[in-house]
Figure 1 (cartoon, rainbow, N blue to C red):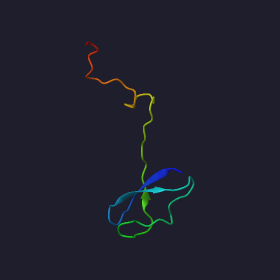
Figure 2: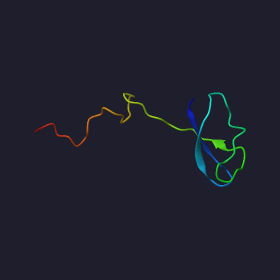
Figure 3: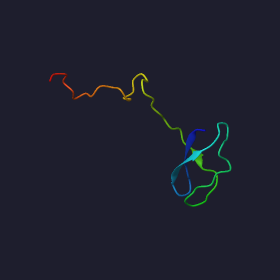
Length: 67
């Protein structure tokens, strides 16, 4: 199950919830102020080997290559 990030519009709290794909979060409450209907945020992620990202396995930019 993926993690989704939410934002409470009442107290400005940001929190993550592990939920099944397809669930809309309409039954969630803010863990801080208990307000309902938080806003789902769009999060980005990075994976090793992804084009254009600084993922694992990239060489160090400060390494000169000489010993």
